[in-house]
Each structure stands twice: as C-alpha cells, then as structure tokens.
Length: 501
Image 1 (cartoon, rainbow, N blue to C red):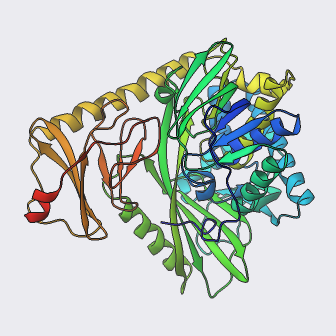
Image 2 (image 1 turned 90 degrees about the vertical axis):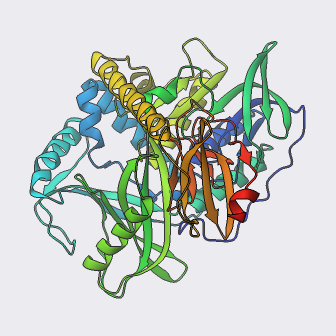
C-alpha cells in the first residue's frame, strides 16, 4: 500500500552514518515533528542529526490525508471534556501557531498549498448532537466557526461545523524541503538507521543504533509512540489504524475538507498532483491488531466511494497509525519529570499536521531556554481522576486482549489447507504461538509473540504485516519491526517443512 504522496521519485540524498559522532541534539524520527524540531534547533546553531529507521515520512507523515486545519473533527469537545477551559484554549492556540508557521514556511519556499473551508459534519441524525457540542467547544476555545445546515456533499448529512480558510497540503513537499533545509545548516539526515537504546553517559547520552553508537547532549523522540519505555507512555496511548484511498472521479468533487463526527468515519478532500485532480477518501479506523480483516475495511471504503461518486477509479490505497492520549491532548516535553536530556512528542490523535509543528515549536523553545505560555498550559497539564479511570480502562482492555489471545492459542492448530498468497495465520506450535504467511509466493514463519510485552500477534491482510493488539507494535511479514514500542524484530524460523507440505 503506497500513499498518493509517497508515490514519487525521492529527491533527498541522506547523509552517511559516522560511528562515534557527537551532536548537541539527536532527533529520532524523520516525520514532520522530527524534521521541524531539527530545523528549529539547527537554525539556532546547534549541531543536529535526524535518525530515521526507514525513509523520511515513511510512517505517519507520509500516510496522512494532509489537512492543515484547526477544525479537528470531534477532538476539541473531547479535549474540553477531559481538561480545563484554559487547556482547551491552549490547544487551539498551539495548533494555530503550528498552522501559521507551516503556511509561512510554504510561502517562503514556494511550496504549493490550497486554502479550503473545513467541515465537521454529522453523517447520521444521531450525530447532530455531537456536531452541536463540537460547535460550542470551538466557540468557547476561540475558533470563529459557524453552524451549517446544508453542504455540497453528494449524500445526506445532518448539520456541520464550518471553519473557513483552512489549508490542505502535500506532506512530502514539506518533508523534503525541511530535510534539505536541515542539511543546508550542517545538520545530518540519516535514513535506514534504527535507534535501539539510549543511556546516560557522563554528562551526555550514548545512543545505540543499528549501525553503531553516537553521542548527544539531548535526544528528542518523535516516533509516533516513544521507543523507550521510560515513563510508560505506551500504557497511556491508544493506537489505531485508519485508511485512505485516492480516486479519479469523472464528475464534480466537493472542494471543502470534510470529516464525519460519527461512525463509520469518513474524510474527504481534493488533491492535485501533477495535472490530475484526485478525491482522497479516508476512514474506517480501528484499534491496531483487533480488526479481523483490515482488507475488508479498505474494500468497504472503496464501495462507499463508488456509491456516492459514480465512476470513481481507485489509484492509491494506504494506511496510517495514530496514537490517542488519555485526555485527547498531546504529550510533549521531558520523557519523565526532571529528565532534561530525553524529550518526546506523541499523542497527536490523527491531527499531526498542526500538532507536530506546535510540538516542535514548544520543544525547541524549551531546549533553547525559551518559554511559550500556551505550551506551559497545554503540555504541563496534570493527570485528573478521569484520566486515571481512562488509564485503568485502557489497561484492562489490554489485559483482556492478552489473556483472550493466549487462551485461544491453547487450542489453535496449523492451517488446514495451504495458505493462498497474502494470507497469514497464527497458531500454536509446541508451547508457543507462531505466525505463518505467504507473500509474493514465498512462505515466512516467525514468532507469533510481540517482542514488546508478549502480545499474540494478528495478521493484517491489507498490509501483510503482523500487528500487536496490545500497544500497536507492527512487524513485516518476515518479522522486521515496522513501528510501535517494540525494539526487536521477531524470531524467524525455517519454513522448509511447511513449504514441503
């Protein structure tokens, strides 16, 4: 699955890894949050390196829908429900700062973007109440929204919140420009090099990577979910995957950016790439590793589009992973209180275009001894009783999933018939779960247990990966770690006997 944005020749020349090199700051993660942070620090004269385990923007940033909007579906009413009015206003101010910074950057570097009105709409009569709540939350937090009874959508809706003059972007245009900008300021951008450990060493940090060790005074984890277990942020984040498809459409396409507030989730926007105008449709989100057939969710999204946009032809399909915090606002700052060397940015809950830049502005200011009032209010908030209850519920759900899946393995058996291409299954072999799949005609056999905290993996038939239902770690069909809090690949086994059968 390749996104509309990633389907292009690469223009970045990554830097070579140099063992034992030393930097002021190492940024882990080559997405929008990581690159923006690196650039802001490099502009101040710091020596900076960005380490990306795969290629730039290959995880969340390159697989978004690219909406640079302050209207975040039903997000703000949830932020307001779990936090004070001051935190909700700071959330809006932070995202406004992120949006303004990124639009200025686009103008300065002649990067294309389109101004569009954003709509959060109700797809069902029951969703109208949620639209009203979001409207009130937006108003209370200072957004100049209106309540609309009609829309240009080719299907029935039941009211919408509208915020004028928002923007849509191609995230790869920005990522590539940011990377070059970092390099022009003597920063390094290093791809295909995974950070696996960070240890305090003397008056700095020793960073272990898949290519060797380097040193830094500070490190920023901009990796979706933190790759280090300190602070146990993985236990305070809920991982979800959602899907997006691009279509060519013979008829008219609504020009606004639309997002449903109710289920099933639906996101729509236009996107011009080259001479082609596409319709981008997203939705059908679910918890990672807990969906029986992600491929069915992709087919459902395609069928829905064909119903409402006759003649639509699918050109691309992709998926992204996002993390929701307990109180719906991001976690940004020191990984644990008092640690002024390891920092993180996570919990953007599908709104990373503005939240990522806001986090970068706050982190760079903090690292350079500056201060932003909205950042102190938003990122310095305290855990509430409601958050504690949500954490307990999230933990209970993880515990139930862990026990249920391990119990299921006590009676599981190998596949009764040979696997077709693209199929995978987890079954018990001896005392342990193993995963067997067939991809591009070849069988692969790996441990069926996540290397993070021992969750039993499930087969993702849309992306041909092994996904963990506990904290969202994902592995390729042959066991290589893709994303999430796991740091080790899956153990691989000989498949000769299986192939013979």
